[in-house]
Image (cartoon, rainbow, N blue to C red; front, side, top):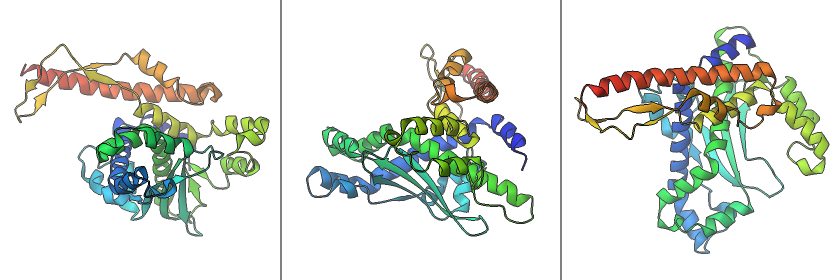
Length: 318
């Protein structure tokens, strides 16, 4: 596997891949709210324990309409959804000592082929207190969805990116033929430096207070691994407003009856500054930073082309 070739491909990755992550995140959390609202309502009434109020899990395959969306059907995420019939996402209670926000796991056979995938989003005692104090949740599922989105959307994008990269990398290996490779996770074989690092610091990596010096050493090294860099980059893209509606123009009636609206691009300099707020940015080497700036710039130019074409078309009917 030519890792440099794969990095270059990720730099050129189009906006559709990131929109697919955001769309899936919204759909998962909305479905999570629908499935668990009854339990949460019972918890708020004192009829259910906090640890089991999110007992209903979401299977990503149930949201397979993403595969049929014209804009997203060609994405790696759509391919992944069609590949796994079992891809469970669930919320799990954990103690305050566990600092992990979320976890992606893949169950594999001896040859390294993925059989099923799961993502766990963790909630802690302080989350339960926020649920109890939120005055809108009792009003319905939509408010629970908004609450869950505020709590988990960024972490879920991060873990979905790991899953997509894992699926993508295995596809690349299998398409080359030959013997199956070892187990993979997010562009890193399980016997790679990333796994070796996790093993070396297994006693402290989830408990920073146990040995802060050792944890910082682990953390800074881990932040530089490619699969982790691109997952955090996806979080930044997810939270970046590349364009916004032009408040100074009226809606136009388009030929198909839909409202047409013009847009204004966020200045590229502002988008790049937003990128530099990425968690772990200061831990990255100069080459990694240049790659991310180039990737963000490519996305900005893609959106700018769309805005130019859209505004030109809408202007015909204003």
